[in-house]
Amino acid sequence: MGDMFNKIIAACRSLYRAMSDELRLVAADGGILLIVAFAPIIYTSIYSMAYGSEVVGSLPIAIVDSDNTPQSRDFIRCVEAGNAVDVVAEPTSMHDAQHLFYDDAIYGVIYIPSGYGDRVLAGESADVSLVVDGSHLLIYKHIMEHVVAVAATLGVELMVMDFVAKGEDAAGVQDFAMPVVAEVENVYNPQLGYGTFVMPSIFIVIIQQTLLIGVSMAEVRRARRGQKGLCGAVVTVIGRLCAYLLMYATTSIFILGVIWQLFDLPFVGRIFDVVLFMLLYIAASTSLALLLSGVFRRREAPLMLLLWSSVPILLLAGVSYPREAFPEWMYIVGRLFPSSSAVDAFVGINTMGVGLECVSSELITLLLLLLCYTLFAILLEWRGYYRK
Image 1 (tube, rainbow, N blue to C red):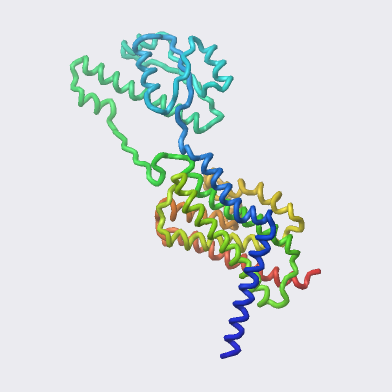
Image 2 (tube, rainbow, N blue to C red):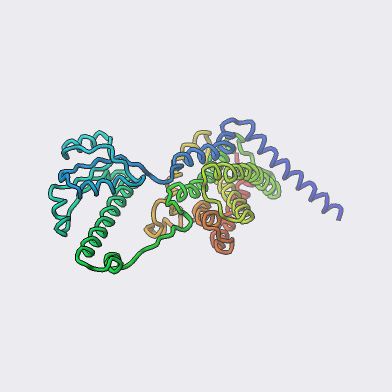
């Protein structure tokens, strides 16, 4: 019994020594410290500021009114109402509006042709042309939706006025003009902001990528020697994993507790669920980093190779591209990265407020990746002792 207790104490001391050695190695290297301690905070802050406005608004446009009638002025006043667009110019011709458009002074042009008022008064269909910069999808969508909404609203009002002038009941005409009234309530992202949509996924990928780079740089600096004996390799790998788990747990607390609240990003999940998920995800990402760290022999290599892979990994997680459009083999490759399963789990727990049981498949995938990558990392550490 005494020998068993002494072995446990010795193993705990070895584990603590491996953990403290890794922490000292990171603290002694400014480059590694910048990557693993400050880069997640810096990148998260920069992306949060970039998407801080959430939605586009007050977009500058121009209106060319070739009709110049009370009806066309009514249309212009409706376009100017609200904060969606800002009518900054009313040129007299499309030629002048074209110069403003090509000089990037405006993002769109509304053209009201001559005869618009006469067609409206006659109860006929009146056309309005819209030219929008299609190179910016969000700007294009925002201006298009606003102008279409204005045209639809004015169309209903004109239809109601026409029926009332003929002696019809106003309430019945309103029901005829709009037979279906849609009431839309946006769940999980009330303002339909891009930052609320994309920041949880970016945060998850930042955690993984900085871990891959930082751990690989530390391995190059360490000049891997490996451990004689399988038990020594197990203690070393687990100790290093605990070291990075401690560092990134502290960083994640700061990001979710300070930056998330500062930029009003969604946080509706239960604290226990978020903590448990983050610990599992950080551990899985660290085990992958420990496994891949033996590939690199030069300090600059992990930074050059892994930094450019952030965008493909973000795409494989199904954030900016529909996952259903992926080939099956690409989807399987994406599952090998902890971030792919973690994005779904974090969005569910943190943004949608679901429990751990609703993301059990993603958590099981992360657990399996953690066990597999840790096992292979231990074997590589053990073999490293016998390698020249």
